[in-house]
Image (cartoon, rainbow, N blue to C red; front, side):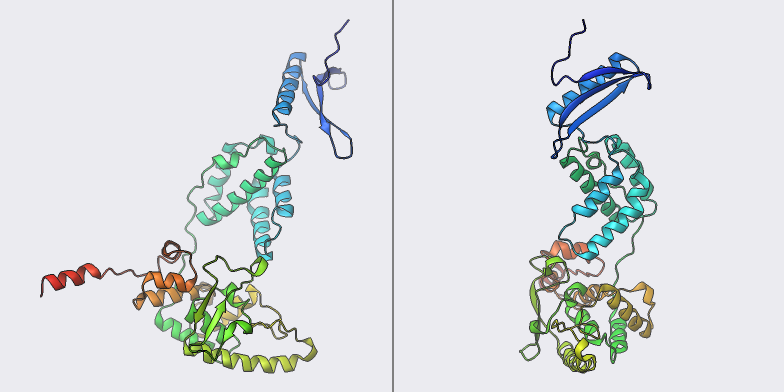
Length: 376
């Protein structure tokens, strides 16, 4: 008489229709009390028993994969839906676009338990032919976080993406800055437009475009000596600035104060024209009915001004006014430590890394000392 297998050892039976040995074991229960059964099959009884032992071993080690049919696409979509809570709309849209364009089409059909480091290496190598290194870092980050979330939910044993290095991608769009003549041309072209105050404040204070879009009149002091703006908010989720050092109060040049005074008068006229449609959010830079501007509004209006200034509007974005601020200050001899504080960086290393092409470090101390020692 065949000995009955012990409880927890699973079972083996012959499936006549499939002509295979089927191994099965109960590994737990759903919150609704339904039994969770894991199955494996083999052409021989020994093969099926070997697979059954592997399932039991993984179950005892706490490494059991919940679903062998779970794909990379399932993991990525789950992360997009539940793993980005609290992030702003722009981040959600960006991650969704990158995932749907670069991750899911290439790897989505692959079962997550079968995904290997070689698969990821080949995928990154292919993407390096069309994406910049920064974009490669972003798409790999999406896959890393999606698989990590799946790993935490027992969908996969380990995160093989962590084993893969980021290859060097294509040359990205280089950052650039306006020369003094170009900056003056843009400021002249902005006069009389709805973007005048925005461009003047951005170019002459170095505030981020996300910070200016969230700036309120309560954080603007036009009567102080000197006049100033309190850069305490941004359009990021929660309204926080990018870093703690980004929360700063900036003195404004007279030209900024004059531009904001004229802008406030223009906004008063717009408020009266809008009447009941006006939504008062106290925003300095707002739409015709007082609502917040989005990045597309600003970019579109900015390009019109750039084109009017005689520049190629496709080559410039609003964020490059901040780069221009750094470049113009550096060219005029302002120390990098001061520039770093003005733009709200946590340290000078960030300034040197992000704006290295805009900085012109000139070391004068040695030459001056030698001139003193060895008089010409």
